[in-house]
Image (cartoon, rainbow, N blue to C red):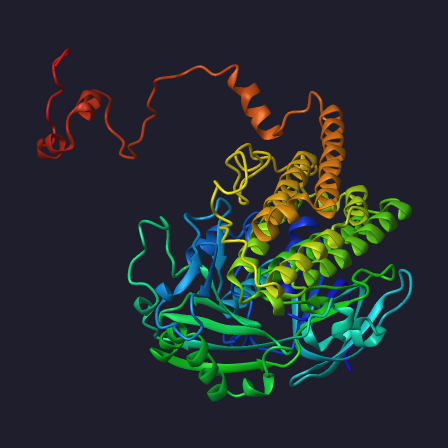
Length: 614
């Protein structure tokens, strides 16, 4: 066995989570020594088939801005045109997309998002990290010891052709997905649906190359959208299940098509073989089946029980669990890269603070707050799919549910991430104190009651601005953080966004009760208690906004813009052109440079100087 090598950070797992963590560490902490352990070769990584091709705003801006990959993503992956949603008008008639009630994104999203080829992305991230000095060990973790306090951890690896080697590290990160390395070592993973808000799902998918995308829609419908239908992440709904359809960037018109299903409504044993899966698609979504049937299936994957949740993510003993090693609920909102973004930035800040020798009490305050926040966010993501099995196939209930969840995504989580509020320990703890899982449960209960009573609240479109009040659309910014480029940590006024989200949600409650249950629902004391509580929270958040403005009085919204404005005060326009030719010319030929090039080229050598004033 070789002599033990020591690193500041050892990452167990070289997939997406491990690679973005390594890149973030090397970009934020100059000189840090990072090692990544993965049993796969570069070639094997490039050919992997994983779900998780779709990114949404937080994951995309993390990749683009924080990791500096925006040009790479534009040049190597596909643009994404938001999420689209489709419910059969009649489950027995699904031959065409026109047989569905649909919600289409009307334009490209304000924050650029992408459909990524996971194999290509992970292979390229590996190459970038190697170029930045990250050490890669192609081997399998055979054992590891997690030490207490600041004692170095130890990892034993079996490396192909080299036997076993040992690494030691000040910080140990589990990014090994469903191997659950730290989870098994510390009994840290919860699988029981009763502890996952009843979530009991399965997943199954195929990759298909050479599809005929015109079977989906030949041309964009100019009356519905100004962007592509095909390049959205398309959701196809049915009772107790939903399908995704995601284009993948390669040369063979490939797509990822798969389903999340609920075991209480769909018998998973009837989906665990490719032929069974295709029969299910053909019977329930004929239009989708025709797209699959037009190409060649490359693989088939079935997961009986993918959902899980960890109890702890960041230990005071300097070990961390991120990505699927921490939690996974459902692929519905494409939140995988988002959950990883929150976790990676938190881990990097903890390690940076320790690396810089900051006050131990301050570091522990951050670690404790970040751990609680990230575990809470995992619980929130899990809760987001509560009662999905009851609602997915009902276009009325599910469209209202998506609208409500979009309100909080764009009004709370996206600005919180962009403003780096999750890295403020006080705000992280306040987020947990003001947890709204209880409120969302009451809304999910109302959706279920509406279905049970055979009621219809109508259809609501999360991309339209004429359905609630004041021309509001759920994808709106409540503060102009993108237009004004408010990217400095905690500078974005998150409290204004929170206040408006609470206010508009109170209106949402009233409108939904009226549409679903009529006058009795609108006048119900329970309805008004909820609405008034949300209004009170809106007022409370408004006070936070006033405090934020007071604390930041005199501080520019953007330091970079303020500096540019200051520099411009001394701006003087200089209408001069600088010499641009590399050919040396004799002084007496100076005037000929002003002649057209074709005249210069035609002139014989030794041409006399032109008369003055020519």
